[in-house]
Image (cartoon, rainbow, N blue to C red; front, side, top):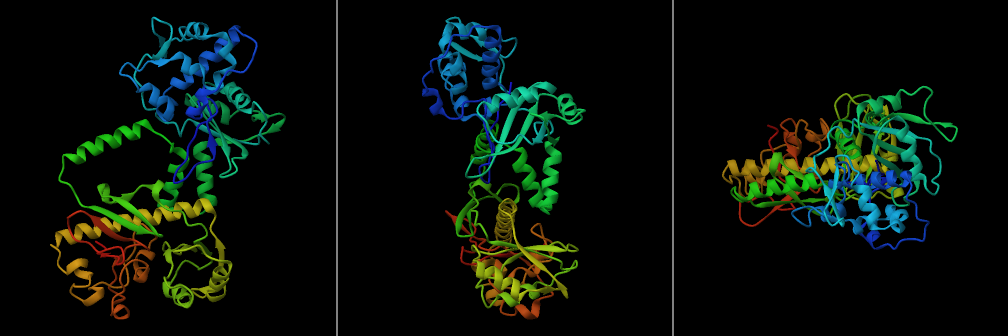
Amino acid sequence: MAAVESTTPVEKKDVEMTSAPAEAKENTATATETTVDTSDEAKTKALQQVEFYFADSNLPYDRFMWTLHTSNPEHWIPISTVASFKRMRNFQPNGIPWLADVLRTSESLLEVDETGTKVRRREAVKEPKDQFERSVYAKGFGEETPGMQDELLEFFSQWGKVNAVRMRRMDGTRAFKGSAFCEYADFDSVKKFIEADPKPEWKGNELVVMSKEAYCDMKIKEKGLTGKAAELKRSATSSRKEFNAFSLEKGKDRKEKKSTEEEKPEIYLEFLGTRLKVNQENGGSVDESEVPFVKGATLKFTGCGGDVRFAEVKEPLKERFEKPPFIKYERGSDWALLGFDKTLSEEDVNFVKENVKTINNNTVTWEVLDEESEKAFQIERAQTAAQKVVSGNLASSTRGGRGGRGGRGGRGGRGGRGGRGGRGGRGGRDGGRDGGRDGGRDGAAKPADDEKTGEKRKRAVEPDGGPDTKGKGVPVIQSSKKPKTDES
């Protein structure tokens, strides 16, 4: 049995649950007047629906069902509650005793108590494996029609047992995109669907079909994503974001483990006008769901010929932009991304196009980055900034605070306000050479002798990437000053 399920991150995704209870409010719904149907077909559908609610592919990802499941040590859930769910309304006229008898026929998943009023799983919940690899993509379903969710489930079931069907929807309007993801229970079903000859058709129209992995790779290639941005795109497409009982349990274990260790000062990151708490484990990170999305703050140029001098880009923009853009560029690439600290107006975009027409003696073309790629890019920037903040804090601790508030590059450090660093570093995860010359005002206090020390560069924290701490601990640069960290 399957359902269209919810996903969605750094941001709500464009899919919705089709078979599980969408919200707790559905449980208060009253039964509609329908004819009592006790046929074998009705019994099969009722059992499949309830088994879906309790399946590994749904229960730990459905907040309301998980709350019911964990409300008592024995994990019993009232059958009357399950019967009140939206997708069980057609069976309500049959009564609770009828549904209890149906659930008793479950071969291995469910069991009913002696009173016939409660139901639970027979075995503990297990975390599903290979969901991404067992999923397929299909496009060409046209406009949404009443009852389409059930029709899609029946359609995909022709090739094997289905765990979940997700109707993809537009952000904001929730309009159906005409495409869907289907998670099969096994790899054989995936192969049968993708290699079907003739290809699967929907109401006479041939569908575009491929594995979910192939779909993700196609989108990554179309958007020109590489490195961390590509990883984030793949993660966003394959993971569940709204609720995950397994992640909560792992987080609880980490929290308990952390409480036994020496308490560390909390570090916060100022990023694009938002204060983000930095997780100091594994080198530093921030919660993707907390990263702000500033729409229209990113531009992309193409045609540089495989090399970029950042001065060619930044110098002409100083006249209009108080803070120079953050540049992501990988050596040898023909394109780069520019991240600004605000939404760009039409005048801002035209200014950039008019004042930076050539780079590396090549005419470049400019474009506004699409929303999905821009979100991934801004998350990437925030994660990189968090890593640099943690790295700088640890370096400051190791040096014993030498150099005052900012370590060797702080206000009281050796080398004046800017320290012994240069304008940036030789590279890093956030875009090859950009991690170097793209330091300066983008992340840290600019050295007084910046022009003279350009060959000896250090990496700087990303735009708006200054940390501060909560509680007592190693002093670090406050949010108004971004720390520099050694490349090594």
